[in-house]
Image 1 (cartoon, rainbow, N blue to C red):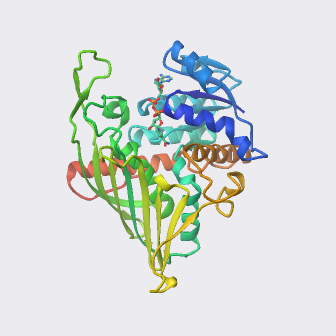
Image 2 (image 1 turned 120 degrees about the horizontal axis):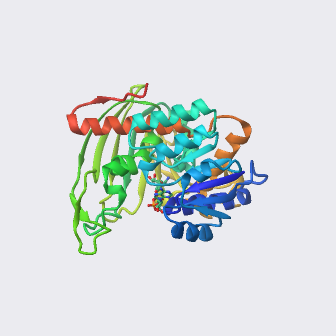
Image 3 (image 1 turned 60 degrees about the vertical axis):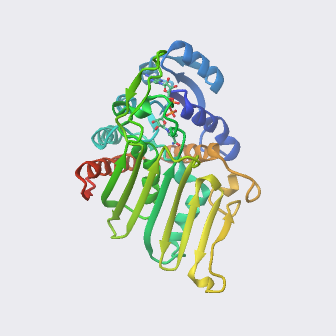
Length: 375
Ligand SMILES: NC(=O)c1ccc[n+]([C@@H]2O[C@H](COP(=O)([O-])OP(=O)(O)OC[C@H]3O[C@@H](n4cnc5c(N)ncnc54)[C@H](O)[C@@H]3O)[C@@H](O)[C@H]2O)c1
């Protein structure tokens, strides 16, 4: 199936690796993704990225791939403000779509994207790749099997430090009009996706946030002019799920030493599950049935006995990285597409997460609990 990828930055590299490698892991593959056309912002960048990432053709006009009858799948890996227009045009042209998270700048935009995709009857996916990590899927299996009893609460974090230095430039991620929000939507959306995947829908939220570094150097200014930052650096969020359970999430892009602490704990009446992306092959499990003498966590290294293990490496702890999460995502997308069923996670998940992000931001402004509106 011919893929056109729009954007050739960080995610462009990750998705291109997945297209190339997916059949090498999942064989027989549901489809062979062909890296057909790469679109970038300029001709020079497009030609260079196409060569680097193995695409046969390149363009600096994203509409050219929407109009190309040879293209089956459009993959959108551009900054967040560009997703909506591209998605709606691609859907109306009947292309199947993978779009990076957050699906868009806010829930009303994400809703328009979902409606366009549903009206077109195409396969649509939001790239919440972390929920496909074997240890995370294993956690969901254990919850579904009742291994930790009834879920009491969820505790999630996504702490990073890449922008802790105040001289880190004001790239698009610090501009509300291009990103939608800061840490809340950028990295918090992954934790919200974990919460929804592992526990269920969120009914209401209460949140506080801070912007600790209100100005950053303009990357376009050789004189070092400063630009105002209008998104959050940090937030602390309380959740109430529709089923009544509670939870909390903390997100930061300024937490020195926390390079990529994406994690969760799920506490149940009979046990606890702990996941930490920096040790992403592992799930820590504590079970009440172990008794007082053996009380504590066992560390399970995922391997062939766990989700997707047959397609990954022949023994536990050989190591799955970021690329494998994208390869599994790619496998799931093409499996759904070829089987004619909805992808999981789809734009529905992108939209519902966007609605939770909107409610979080509204709560920081209102200093009150805010109901999630994802009707
Ligand atoms: N799932 C994940 O783990 C994950 C991780 C990082 C980023 N993301 C998401 O992926 C998306 C892209 O993020 P990134 O880190 O790759 O950003 P990036 O800045 O590294 O890359 C974006 C690319 O899009 C290109 N671009 C801009 N305008 C364009 C246009 N009109 N046509 C074609 N290309 C254009 C830019 O030149 C740039 O190369 C964002 O939505 C982000 O939130 C997801």
